[in-house]
Every structure is written in C-alpha cells, then in structure tokens.
Length: 584
Ligand SMILES: Cc1cc2nc3c(=O)[nH]c(=O)nc-3n(C[C@H](O)[C@H](O)[C@H](O)COP(=O)(O)OP(=O)(O)OC[C@H]3O[C@@H](n4cnc5c(N)ncnc54)[C@H](O)[C@@H]3O)c2cc1C
Image 1 (spheres, protein in one colour):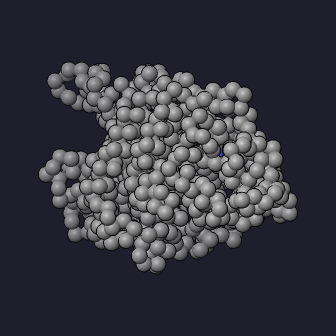
Image 2: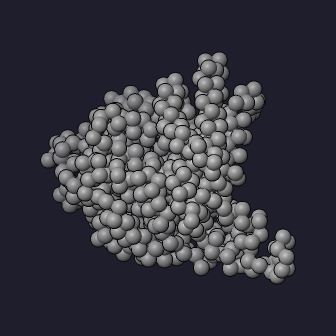
Image 3: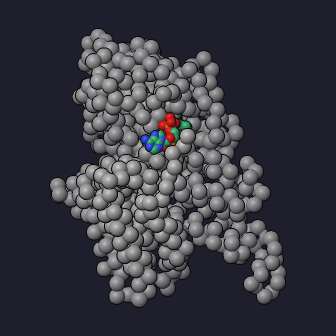
C-alpha cells in the first residue's frame, strides 16, 4: 500500500549533525531561542500533518480532480478541510516575520516542511505553494498600505495568493506579456490601476479554500517600453477592500497529466482593480523575489517525489517474492530486493535522495544566513551562494525527482503501471516541476550565463573554495579517502569547464547555450560529491550503530555508482567541436 512516512530521523541528521544548524541558530539573534529539541518537535508535528492528513487524500484527489462551474472552482474532497488544518496548525506562518504575525523560524525548517507536504500530496501543495513567495514579494516591494492590508492575511494563510505571469504567447519569454493596466481612481490604498488581459495556467487562480485570493499580475502600463523592461507588477485581489467582487474571472481549468487536484486556471481581467507592487516598469525585479522563493519550493517537490518513491519501492521490493536469486545457494525464491538489478535501483534512489537533502537544506540554511546573519559580509556571501544553488536545486532535483520516480516504477513491474499502487501518479505529478517556475533549460542558462559567466566565474570559484574545505576535512582518514578524491576530481572538472567556456566566450557565443543543461547536471554532481563526503565524515565515528553505517553505505554508493554520470556530462560540456546541426 502506498504510504508516506516523513523521514524525520534523516532530517534531524542533516539539520543537526551534517549542517550543525542548532549551533548556528544559537549565534544568530533572530533564531537564538530555537534549539534542536524545538526543531524536532516542529518537524514531528509537520510529519503528522503530511502523513496523516495530506497523504491519505492524495490518490482520491488524483481520480476526482477539480471541477469548474460558472467561474468557480471546486477542489477535490478533503482539500479545503486539509487547508483549514494547515492554517490552524500555523504552518503558513512558520518562516514569516513576527511583525506580520509570523513565527520567525528559519527557512531551513520551512524547507523540511515543504519537502514533507510535497511528498505527501503535490496537488494540494500547489495552493499554499505561492503563499510565501507572494509574502516575500509584497514585504520587499509593496507600499505600506499594501503591506498593512495583505501581509497578515497571507502570513496566517487566511487568504491565498497566485502568480499571474503566463499568457498564450508569453511563456518562458515574458517580454511578450500583453496584459495592460491603465490609471484608475485614487483609493485608500493609493493610486489604483485597471487591469485588462488574459492569463493562462494560473495555479489556484480560483479555489474554494479561502475567502479571498491575492493575485500578483504581470502587465504593462500605457507608457511602457517594449520587452522585459516594460513590465509592471500589480496586486489585484478577488474581493476588493470594500467587499465587492473584483472584475477577475476564472474562465476554465485545464485537463492535464498530473497534479490533478491543483486547479490550473485560465483567468481574465476586465478592468480589474489593482495596485502597483514596486516601481513602474520594474515588475520583473519584484517578481523575481517571488520566483526565487518559489524555485526553492519547487526543488523540494523534486526531493519529496524522490523520497516517497524510494520509500514505497523499498517496501514493495521487500515483500514481493519472485524468482531465485542466482547468486544465492539455497535456491529458494526470494524477495525482489535481493536481485542485484532491483537492489541497485533502490540504492540509486536512496543515495540521490540523501545527498539532495543535504544540498537542499544547506541552501535553505544559506538563505537564513543571507537574511539574518549578524555580519554583513557573511550575509552577502551567503546570498551569492544561494543565487548559484537555487537554479541547480530547481532543475537538478526536479529532473531527478521525475527520473527517480520513473525508475522506481520499474520495481513494481506491471503493478507499477496500475493506479492503485501509487507510483504512476508520482511519475505524472513529478513531471510538471521540470516545466514551471522557469523550465529546467531556462534554469541551466540562467546558471551558466547570468550567474557564472557574467562575473567571470568569480562567485562559482568562491563556492568551490567552500566545497574544497571538505577535502581537507576528509584527508588523513583512510575510510574517507575515496570521498576526498571524488570531490577533488569534480571540483577540478568544474573549474576546467568554466575556464574553457569563459575563454571561448567571444569566439563561440553559442557554446554555453549548447551545453548549459550538461553543465548544470555536472555542477549538481559536484555538489552531491560534497554532500556525500560530508555525510560520510559525520557518520564515520558512529558506524558501530547500524543506522550510521547505512549513511556511510549510501554515500559510498553515490560516489561509486552515481558520480560516473558526471564524467560524461563534463565530457559533453568540453566537446566544443561537437556539431549541433540547425533544424530545417
Ligand atoms: C500545471 C501548470 C501550472 C502552472 N502554473 C503557473 C502559474 O501559477 N503561474 C504562471 O504564470 N504560469 C504557470 N504555468 C506556466 C509555466 O510557468 C510555463 O509553462 C513555463 O514558464 C514554460 O512556458 P511555455 O509552456 O510557454 O513553454 P515555452 O516557453 O514555449 O517553452 C517550450 C520549450 O522551449 C524551451 N525554451 C523556450 N525558450 C528557451 C530559451 N530561451 N532557451 C532554451 N530553451 C528555451 C523551453 O525550455 C521548453 O522546453 C503553469 C504551467 C502548468 C502546465
């Protein structure tokens, strides 16, 4: 039977032992009251919510889907009640500012929460998925009036939020957005605007969980320059402050491959009232705050899918009896987890999952440092590292989440193809994460061109220097030698690739675009090599305990079986002469 058990012990291991977060909290004024015990209690409660409330309604919601009637969406049975429980549990407020009713806890705990809820029920998670991003965006760029009216409602989860970017002709290329806004009357919340246009694929554009919906809408003002520089961001609520209905309508919902519990809405704005968030024509700057937060959230969806796939594949393989294991001498039929082909599949999933969890939580920890570290230079350094790690986490984890789910399906054989066994839903649900919040191809280009090559590789070199510290920490210990060597080889390959790409930048401007996807995966493996080395080093002194011995096995498996993929990625990155023909 398909189930989810929040991997709390693994989470505590990463948070407390690998990242030593409680020590860092003690030295950060914003978190000094937080300790390991409290963090454990919070995650335990989050685990109960994910296991007990969200996971049980996941499969039925996939079958039932959402329905639309006359502009209104009805979400699957159990969704509104689960959302009520989420709000009552205070989960939306976890990492929000106490000034707006938040609990002021670290993003690190929020990342763990997001991993759990996405694993348990991706479709449901879409509704609160943009809440934090909208909160961040309004907090950073909204007027005082907008902050006063909306931030507490979003923090508490009383209202939900959406992100309205996409239009039929404007997907990855937002410069083609046509939705317009013209000056409206002055209101108590400042100068208003009247928004007209159509948006597509808006997650949670309408729903039956909250009394109001806060739409953030990308549009153009009358004097807007063409292209990305002419985009402005508006806040347009479903219900206006006087209680009247705004001129925003959900025209229908999509029938789609997965996350069927999430309403993907076509929206029309017909002189809908809105207010500017940020400056005119600087909408993308404001929107990026929302998108960066959302990208880390999407990365956690990839990790969550991998985790739930590996848990259930392991449980199934442990019970399914099929065939004799050729290398075993007793000749009795055994469970399929004894067959090396299946065993390897299970270790693939586990090893990837554990390495990614270290990277994901490290990114969230750096996000906390970027916001709250007492020393300004450390805040800036952490921010630079987050900028590099976010596109890698988004694209690498979501790729691996979908590939991993697909590989896991094989463990069930034919049963895997049948709905009631659960994994086929995970394969379908996990696919979208590679597309939205900026496709994985766009992430790869953003990483290589915007984040790495634009500063001559300076930020990446700093990041690699941080990773290199782990080589020193592992050296001298024979059991860790292979980890140090693997990490060292990966760092050298990354440096070589960046050096070559930078040197040829002018002569072959297309090269970095041709190989950006391979580069991102190569860097993903460099980061994993670091994560496995660090986990192994932390686990090594405790290997007398079988649980820690397993951590060492998982890390060693990653280095021996998964890291070889990095070699062909770097090989492809370096193959500048490889011809990529034009398509006629
Ligand atoms: C279920 C679902 C939920 C969604 N939720 C939202 C939402 O809440 N809000 C919202 O605004 N949008 C949402 N979207 C839209 C989503 O963000 C877009 O689908 C996505 O940005 C890609 O745009 P597109 O589909 O038009 O693909 P296109 O941009 O047409 O891309 C098609 C292909 O070309 C590639 N490509 C395009 N440009 C480049 C380039 N410059 N370099 C390299 N490759 C490129 C892409 O990677 C992709 O493989 C959602 C979509 C879905 C399906």
